[in-house]
Length: 236
Image 1: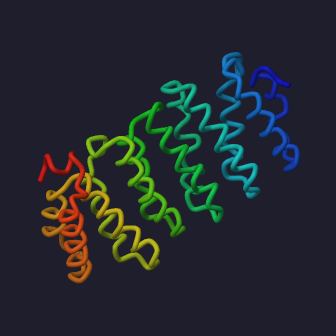
Image 2: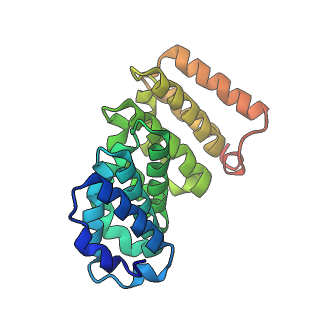
């Protein structure tokens, strides 16, 4: 078994799918040993090579690529920051993958890029493209990621007002799943920030009256049920 990522460098050029899948498995086995990550003089080349796997049409190759990047992000921490732009577009696209597991792993990688690599705000600033993505699953999953981010890092980790225009727009998305997720996400945001969200939405133009009324009803249900989080109670 290989003891260092450096030993895989000569093998990364292969275009053979079966060999890539096996190579990915071998790399992941090696990465179970923390020492495997320490001795790699060409980590930049390694990351650049694996980043192409994220957009591979074979889901297993892509899955291995996402998993490798997630481990590297966790282990390298801030040292991984220069590589965010390298892997970001393909990771966004994988949020819209047809396979649930790939979408789940793509969200997991995004969370690792928020911490320990960068910050939630930095990543969501870059994710603005996802709210308008042509693939409806990307539009849907970026909102699920927002919910996960709030639960993991808290409402103070993001300037939520920056995200409101995109969320409001998605309330009227052509896809019903996206519309439903936008509604659910705004209710989730309300649990975290409280009444200031209600006040903000009531002042906004462009929200169809029936949708606004439904949101207010759902907010009232959350409040009545005592489901507001402490962070929301402080600001209500």
